[in-house]
Length: 369
Image 1 (cartoon, rainbow, N blue to C red):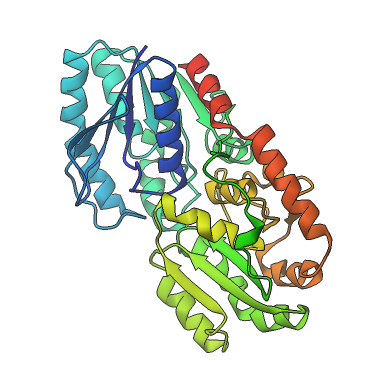
Image 2: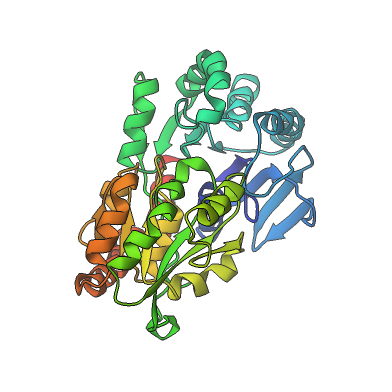
């Protein structure tokens, strides 16, 4: 097949959805297909690049931050990418367009189908579904009819967890929505117990720093968590975003700034050392699709304590606990020194290897394409 992929996020831009785009497109190429990816340009990146057979075209549009973008920036992306993808389709013999995500790139898929009869599938990420992100609440209310039109005309819709599928169906239930799980690279992410600090307990959080991720429920309770531990605890926060300053202020307010270490945004190649140095992975997020950070933590053999968000039921089965964000500190206090942690960590690794491989995801998508 000759596959056109359109995504406004691709590493090093974006988060979990960008990571999925990378592994899926690489998988398509390795399976013998021709793939052209149209994404956004960012300072320091090449406008045209061939990555092990994957042709990448980066279009210059407004984009101030790697880890997040505004609706205005999405609109700029659409306006700049539309003519580029139109030229590609006129010149190339594409079989299908794979769109990441319903908004903004769904607009591109819809246009290409109406203008050039190119079929398209949409892979949802979470934030592209109305109701998922509070910051886009008013915008999505206005454009909801057009979003439904994009979904209706797509040749397939895909969610990465059963929870996200149900969330999407609550908005529009006139189409079937398939579920294809995210994967994780278990060769790149693996356990190494020697990297852990035996003198303290390291709670680890990896994600964008936005209010929805829920760290504001954990930081104020670190002193209470410490009371239940037989070692000093520290909370390592890897990631960046608009909510970082509020979280830093919260650590100062509750006199735990000496226990919380904000490491900032890290490239994929830098993350392994943090996962391997962690003891418990915490994820108090309110909403997700299927969080890549949790999958990476599992691949590195970490027990996981996470909130009941989309993807949690598939991810947590005998390798941790699902608990609400505001109650997470109580659970952490109870399991901090439990012998179960080691067993949960082993089960995390096992589930990552057996249940969440990118090879399986690639094959499922290729059948659909």
